[in-house]
Image (cartoon, rainbow, N blue to C red):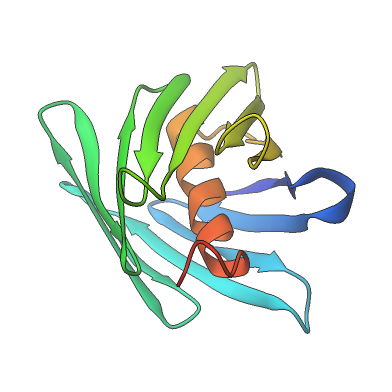
Length: 147
């Protein structure tokens, strides 16, 4: 059965995110038709792999954390419904904080001043899936994230 994950990254001046979740596959788009990137992910026994636009995504479960890369950037995520982590390098990276309440996920990528808020309707997906999709969308559409 297909489920829909949808929302926005960056508020009114940001981007739409819309993905279908069908079993272990997450497919959709971040942004619009002209300025957007396709998201194709698969949840595996060991983590998540796939692509965003042309960039590879490979995340593995290691010691209770999801660790890996989105394109050229490192990612670490912890938690299921309260998700925290870090995306990028220590000096030029972004904190990841998100909280699931029912089928809604609200979070922020980056600092108070330079960060981007996101809000997603998860359908029946867990919070960590929404947080991962938000990070992937951020990488795809923010020039500063995909140097």
